[in-house]
Image 1 (cartoon, one colour):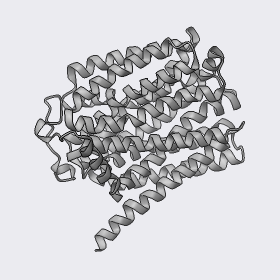
Image 2: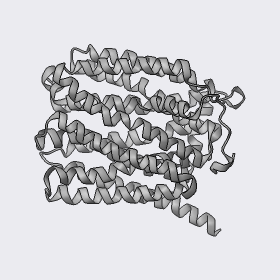
Image 3: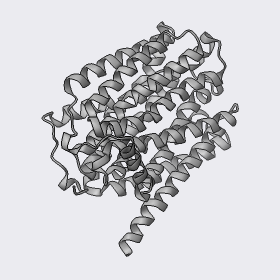
Image 4: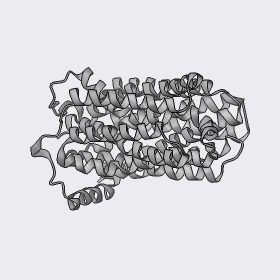
Length: 411
């Protein structure tokens, strides 16, 4: 299959493009909505469960572990069994985990329930990425990924606002009951509308040996690692932001959980805007060039944050404006890096989508540990870690992707 959009495969589904985008967008929301909706409740959960902040942070860490590592299983399994049954099975696990979260009586139970919830939640995004690669070539895939990011942007924009509003009338458990309702909605939509995009004659043998061979081939590919690690570092920076801003905004700067929700949602507006721009121009400009622009923009935002946090400049605006610049650029980075990473691997799109998804979570967990170790009553640890990750992602892209392409062109 040619990587250019002009030679993209004809979609093997009768669903109209807008309907398909809506279905895949909904499947892609699990991670964002499950993380972002409960962030305003973290201080309330500390008090209700009589837990220290480190233990409450493990409810986020447990979700990320489940969400990240389960992808390594879902990807190869879907290459063998197909995308649809894996998606439906994951959503069912998510429902069980959400109910257990809502009824948890201790922080230890909540951590385990969040782990299960994360395991179930990871199926939807992995299958959505793999289904796009099943259906489209490289630049057209980047266009669809941008549209998915635009649609799923509604989740992190609305989720913390909804979570903050629920806390006005109910306790923190109402957030997890709301997530249970979201899971039921997704199960109905996926069961009735989600297509099977992987034909039987394109499926792998499904053995553990085949799965390990696929992962070994992917890890040995410098371009694949370059795309995944550059984007992975930026997503790890985003996870640092997710874990760090409730403390910075609510505890250190004294803003309300409701205001925090609006600040959080504002960053997503920027991400949605640049996702929309990317979807319109990527087939003309090319996904590699758009990825380079996005990486440069994130470096600008991270550098500004480093300065304002280090010298405590401009109060809330000194944190919020650089974060807006950096996080908005993820609307360009995420779509184009995923399209580049999956372009050469149509025969193992599930495994490639899984590995491309799990690397950010491994990096994100490491960043979360660092944030906990250097935690203090300021925004500096968050800013330093985010800058280091963004700079590493930018350098990795230049080294493993740009330099390798220049060398190949000169040969």
